[in-house]
Each structure stands twice: as structure tokens, then as C-alpha cells.
Amino acid sequence: MQQTMLANSSAVANSMAITAAQRQQFEEDGFFLIEDALSAEEVAAAVGVIDRLYEKYRQARNLGPHEAFQVRNIVAADPLLRNLIDHPRILPLIVDVMGYNIQIRTSHLDVRPPMRSEDTQAGLGERGSFFPWHSDAPNFGWPTVDGVIPYMEMKVGYYLTDLTQRNSGAICVVRGSHRRAQKDEQGNYIIDPADIVEVNVRPGTAMIWRTALLHCVTPNLSDHARKCLYYGYNHRWIRPSDFDHQAPEVVAGCTPIQLQLLGELGSGLQNYNGDDPLVHPVSRYWRPQEEDIPLKAWAEQRHANGKAH
Image (cartoon, rainbow, N blue to C red; front, top):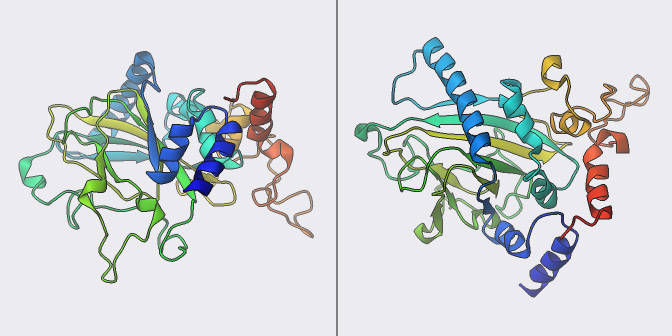
């Protein structure tokens, strides 16, 4: 533990926003919370967009009143949702925990109306339940080391409705599950009930967490729908799951940092395979140039201005 704490001290000294306590919780538990990450006005605006999209798809897909629904690649669905990828209060924390050579891997909204009692009979996260325990991974899984998933990605969850009461559709995480093998020899998840944390939070709270954490969702037995947004970030040499390249209208008008986060080159160029692709192709995701990742200069400038603490 002493070596870990020394590493934490050095990391915090070179950070922009994260505190020592947050760094320790992120490393040991796998998550930490930011209350009031979004203002009441930002929450209301995001809920307005979600309600419009949900109503559109509810009618188009004939969704029932109790049916949960997700929309993926929400950065392409509305400029407001796109612009949350570099929220000024959260972006420094993302770079602190993930570094600056990153991009969006996934983005999605989640609406979970109040549920019928007959749909909630299975135990929390059980196989066959409406939302079983799992950690995020591509098909066929991440590579593991002694059963442990290396640190490949993280997510920001923005919670937009009141989740302070138990069983209101909140996410549950198994703290520390990112640091150990997660299944026994029979393939069953190893979960100590004492490690389950139900994330009961007020609207506007954000959770910064490692997607290797085992997680599930409680049944929504409240009188209102649970609405939230998730943005997953990974290293730029890992491919996204929601898109190959965003459509031109999505990246139009984006800042260089937003271009980087949307999987483009921050310069706005499209020479993804280098300047000599026919003879000597070099992926700019594998070997980026300085102009490809403007988050690097952004982070360095913040440190030069004395904003690290």
C-alpha cells in the first residue's frame, strides 16, 4: 500500500483537478462521484433533449409504458449531447484519470420508466433478470492478466433524475471488482454483497468510473423514469464501438479538442494513415502527431498557467 500511496501523491501533484481522495477511491474502489457536475439549467436542457428523443422512438418502435430504452452514439443525436464530451468541469478529471491521448468509445442515453412488479422478481443482477451483472467489454472479452482486466477505458455517467431513493433504477457497482478476477471456475460472478454500492444520487451528479467494474441496475419502483447519459472514453489506438467515423454534420463546427474526442484528427485533416499511405502507411491513431491530439497542449497549458492543484 505504501508504494500505491506514493504513486498517488505523485499523480495528484501533476493533476489538474483530481484530489488525493478521489484518486485513491478511483484506484481502489473504481469510481468516485461529482455532485452538481451539471447545473439545474444543464440538467433541464439535457432532460428536454432526452424526452424529445424518447418520444420520437417510443412512437416509431411502439414502446410500452414500462419498457426501457437506450439510444447509442448520442453525440450524433443532438449538439447539446455532443457538447457534453468536453464539459469544462469534467474534462480535467477525465484527463487526470485517463491521459490526453483519448477519444469517445461510446455514448448513450438510458430511459427506464417505472417497472411492473412481475418484471422485478429475479434477484439483483441475477442471470435472466432485466439487467444482469456484467463489466463492459467487446465480444470475446478484453485480454486479462491472471483474470484481471487491464485499465482499458472509463466512463462518465450523468444522472439527471432523482435517484436518492433505493430501487429507483440506479446503477449498482461492485467496488474493487476491477482489481481482481471476477468469475469462479464455473463462470459465476464472484460478488461480496458488502461490496455492492447502489449509486443513490441527486440530479446533476456525475460518476467517473472504470467500466471493468461489475455493475447492474436496480429495478425502478419509483413514480418517475430514470434518465441518464453515459460517455465512455478509451485510448485512441482502441477502436470505438458506436461508430467508425462520425458524419460530417456531427463534426462540423467542432473545436480541435472535440474533433479528437470524436475520433478525428484534432487538426481536422483526414490523413488517418499518414502522408505516404501507399508505400509507408502509419496509423495516426497508433503514432499520433502533436497536432492530432490537442488535449496534450491543452493539458500542458493548464499546468503552465498554474491551474493544477
